Image 1 (cartoon, rainbow, N blue to C red):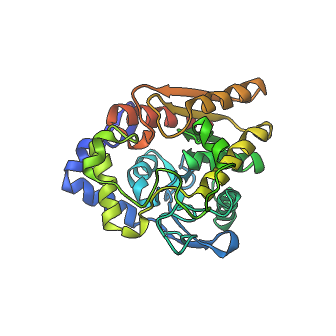
Image 2 (image 1 turned 90 degrees about the horizontal axis):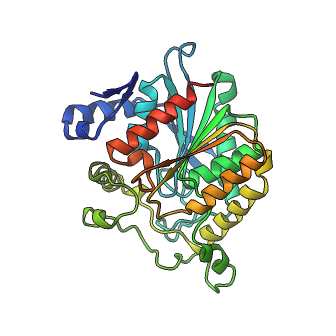
Length: 326
């Protein structure tokens, strides 16, 4: 059912119109090895893994650190593509989202975290829980948006756990006023950040969305949210914003600790995170003599792996080409 591009098997939007493919994808995902592990402060964290049968022939293992509001099932197509190109894949639902425990029980749709460092701690706990270093010869970290920020902090604190990293639309900064203003605003940490609120997505909002140009994939994500209401997540709280701003400062402060090659994909029409911050980070790493590459993807919105085919395939191909080097 997949489209062959070069020597890679990459899914296309047209396949979602085919009920046979839908069954194939659902069947594939249902065979993942999922469960829960204990994260920081006793929080229950959901995970799923998809392992190649022949470890000797696998190209490596990819650990996915997803973005804010995201969840493992949303990444079924991404995992399917990585798996069908020879990689074992692991993914976790970060605390406070997906099927993992929600932190602020009074409003389970509020994007809340006590400390951004807990995201990193959870990922390290998962790494040790699954004994990833012992089970795979090559380990790669793939992070998107908030998950890319988590990944970068992780690599600064544990520089030897992965061979290389790929980051898409990394959350290295917001609009200038965001982090500066949150210090002075007299607001409750458990309130939604200004202009944000409960989960509010619909097909009618597609024309004004800043996440993807793909109506097919946008609609697929909406369907998943309706089918599994537990995964619905609204806007971020002021606490989440404050913690994210602290994390971003630390990402830059401790960048000198990074030691592995990093490939960064930047969306040309980015409206969610700061492009300037991404470029500033890359320039900083280059000055430090780090191995880093920034690739700007034309016409792309924030969610590069949920974009229309022409954009998504370019990112997947460049990612697979990159990982082959290790």
